[in-house]
Image (cartoon, rainbow, N blue to C red; front, side, top):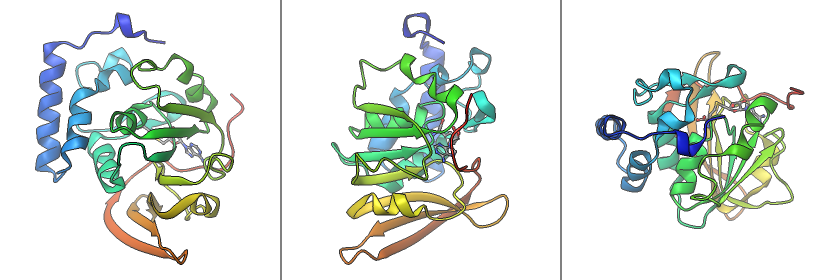
Length: 223
Ligand code: SAH
């Protein structure tokens, strides 16, 4: 596992990160707090050193367990839709590389994040920004179950392609709470939805652009 003291954030990295923020703006990301978080977080720290020079390209990259670190545009898009306020209690499904988790933490959310791949979860005790962002708790489990003992949540973010709206997660959302979910629309594409829980418990459904995520799978892996 990489250690913070061995990593360097050079002027080149910082320059590339600034360019990435400009690209995200051109693609329509307007939330200044989200852009500032992306500007401040060294994405290359979340990737294998082989990706060091390309870490700021606006694309997904492979991580362990055949999973991916989401494309920066996707991270920015989902985070912007969540409308995070400082102190929001956020449940994230799909910890993956911990990059999206870090963006949420940088915005001042209290983050609870679940990963079903043991190999990925086993990397979380060495989280590089433990001291900077103590407002994150990592869980190994099945995101379809959520965290009933810690519910309800202000916001729920699903970072994998969901075959359906997970009922148990919907129950764990506060009234006026929001869930961002990429819901399967075809075999290869998901529709980004923002679901808001209304006072009477019914759902306000807003639909946004189409994306392509790795699948949200039931259960957790043994190794
Ligand atoms: N937010 C991550 C995205 C990783 S890709 C990042 O940007 O790095 C999606 C992640 O969701 C994968 O790590 C995958 O293992 C995880 N995942 C899929 N189904 C899940 C489930 N039911 N519960 C928890 N995690 C799940």
